[in-house]
Image 1 (cartoon, rainbow, N blue to C red):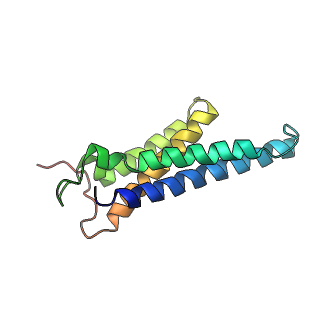
Image 2: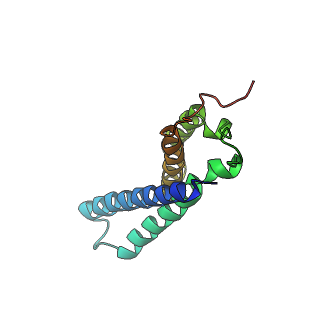
Length: 134
């Protein structure tokens, strides 16, 4: 996996940033409504660290499922259709009745997985549309 480090780094940063932003917005909203007295640094650390960990793991999923054993390894999980399905899944999960914390994790992980596809799309090989070899 020649780009494992690059994907893991960007997933880590994007997942951690997502967790950080989600928690900042939530905490300030609760403080504004009077539901929370003071800012919780522990909660912020938990959300940021959890998002970063999920991001690290999820950004590397396409290469675990389709290892880069040759230059043409990009198939189903390295395709534009996988990206579209991930976006649809993120939207549906966030519109569902799932617990808020689970939605947050899905958001951080899903965005990090998408970062893998975005990075790969910028390479000379790009991404296939569907990724199924006929």
